[in-house]
Image 1 (cartoon, rainbow, N blue to C red):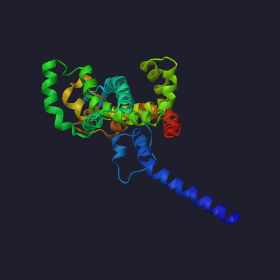
Image 2: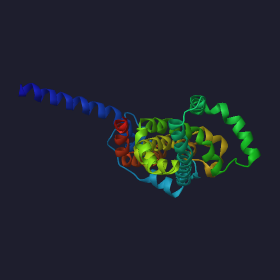
Image 3: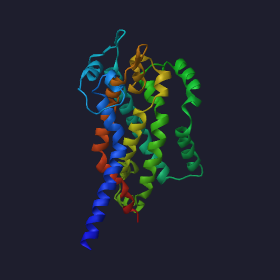
Image 4: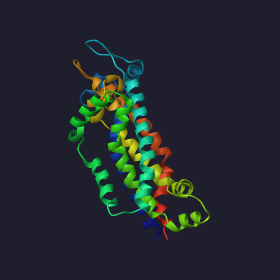
Length: 285
């Protein structure tokens, strides 16, 4: 019996290791590429044995990209700062607008509330190319073209529907009796929302905010069309590594490592909120 249990444990461990290796291999390979030169990366057959170099990261930080043909100026660190500013600003605005709206949809249902909520959600499903032309025209007329505020505002097409629908589900899972008992004590609707509903739905709000941040961080098309080079995020700035002398694979790999680091650290920090959010529905009576 113990022998069978030991064999099952070994087989389970091997299976888990294979799965982890399968999914982690691309990330590990990208990290290895970031410490290699283009010549090392493109050699055939590829090898994990090489002399590491920090030139790729040095080029990103200093803004000087050395190629076989010439020396180019790149603005990766500025693009990285733009990504942080745009993603944080978009998520903050979406939380300010979306959390009260989600509570209203969850607690004050009307005849058209479902239709309105679904209409807002449909903005998330609409292809960006569908709205780019009218957005470009309106932004030029309103003076929002090529501005941080304009990009943060248009990012609401990504963040706001996501936060609205996810947080709404968490508010619906909170027992209304808890809020009613607090209201009996003479507290206002806003006080109940701020001190009871929001803390109870905190893990869900954190999870929704994290997902919205990732989607905003990975956005490409809006910033490509509506912003100039000095306001574009890393997703667009990475195009600078495709030069006339060739594709700079090492710099691209280093840029990927640096660009995924903030979202990875945020996901690790917010992991406990994601786990708590899964059990939030247990309070529903």
